[in-house]
Amino acid sequence: MTTVSAYAATSATEPLTKTTITRRNVGPHDVAFDIHFAGICHSDIHTVKSEWGTPNYPVVPGHEIAGVVTEVGPDVTKFKVGDRVGVGCFVDSCRECPSCRAGEEQYCTNPGMVGTYNAIGRDGEPTQGGYSGAIVVDENYVLSIPDSLPLDAAAPLLCAGITLYSPLRHWNAGPGTSVAVVGLGGLGHMGVKLAHAMGAKVTVLSQSLKKMEDGLRLGADEYYATSDPTTFETLAGSFDLILNTVSANLDLNAYLGLLKPDGTLVELGMPEHPMTLSAPLLVSARRRLAGSMIGGIAETQEMLNFCAERDVRPEIELITPDYINEAYQRVLASDVRYRFVIDTESLRG
Ligand code: NAP
Ligand code: ZN
Ligand code: ZN
Image 1 (cartoon, rainbow, N blue to C red):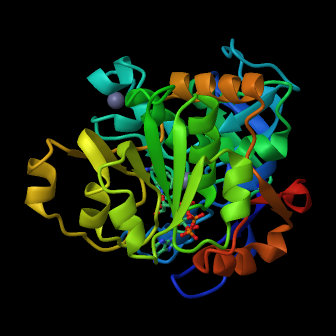
Image 2: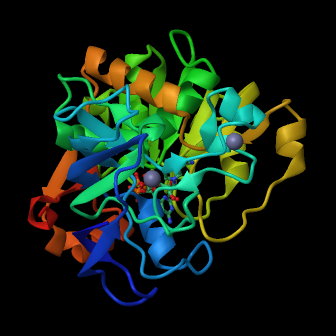
């Protein structure tokens, strides 16, 4: 085992603090890599604040991880020392259930994917995430980062990027489709960039018009404030696809009314509390309410390649690890443009 520096949460209310954790020895199929950058996802905050149930403290969050390979096991075929790699939200799965066999490991049913942090690995040990100096992961759960993508900008693609790419592909966003993105945060800004790159007409639905200039620059065709009630009248029945990235409860019914007949509202945000649904809004226009979670390994690689080819990159604010707690406060205040990425240099050995 090796010891590495990390930032961990020890309770729902204490700030994250610097600590050390251990990483397993490199097994035959493992890749060890130095972490260079780790994105801060709102899921990290939900987890450490116990909003999804009490996690297994101490928790080292971080599932948007990019770095450079330092060692590979003897049976590794996909990677070599020096390769630029990434890891997203999971580090293992059963590899046998129908979802795993279909390349949708995120929906593994037996008993489920192994999360990058706050999970128990197949070796029985707790997993710890990317706010740290190094990690060891089975090669089948490691992504290759194309040369043209800088490592810092690649990190947020591993969760925010794939979480928007997958539903946009699944629901066939492209020329002739009208897509709305609700919430212009880490996920939302990737939704705007990706939907625009795929050729869809993109509308941002944000709480205010504060970020309108940014939204239009990122690729939105239209931008509306949801605090203005006339928005919901103006846009009634407008969209084929609505991607809701908001981390808090919303009046989903108001948004269902913005769908065309047969349109789909995809829930991506995972707020702490349940939301209510008005049946007539679904029934009256054969609308659909769906959910979607990240993407499988193959689709994540496809997304990375797409972003490299089409020059789609997240807008990031680089921080040092001692700024993590302040960054969390700013994410909670919707004051992020548009993803905090931790430069983990000071955590590397
Ligand atoms: P984020 O950067 O905080 O963005 C969320 C955005 O939602 C904010 O920027 C804000 O946008 C809007 N918002 C926040 N509070 C709001 C409120 N009370 N009412 C209306 N709008 C509000 O968070 P993120 O990292 O993008 O994550 C968003 C959510 O997705 C989280 O719940 C996270 O856990 C979840 N998530 C899900 C998946 C998945 O696989 N499905 C993957 C990653 C994350 P405006 O300022 O533009 O209104
Ligand atoms: Zn995430
Ligand atoms: Zn499985």
